[in-house]
Image: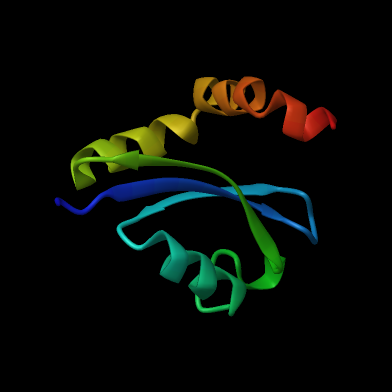
Length: 87
């Protein structure tokens, strides 16, 4: 079976902000974030995963990651995770 590429959104427990990224090894990447190995999130730990999607190609994952970082992508996530953010 072909490997997947994952787009993920992490929420910082410290500042409540989200971080969006992509990877081909979701569990390893979340571990790297929470151990402080990722520069952009090391001071925002702990982090928890609140959303992910799987893509069949790296190119598709990169495009989706870029979209989710736009205003419309953030609106999509807010709508998609409405019960998480309000409950």
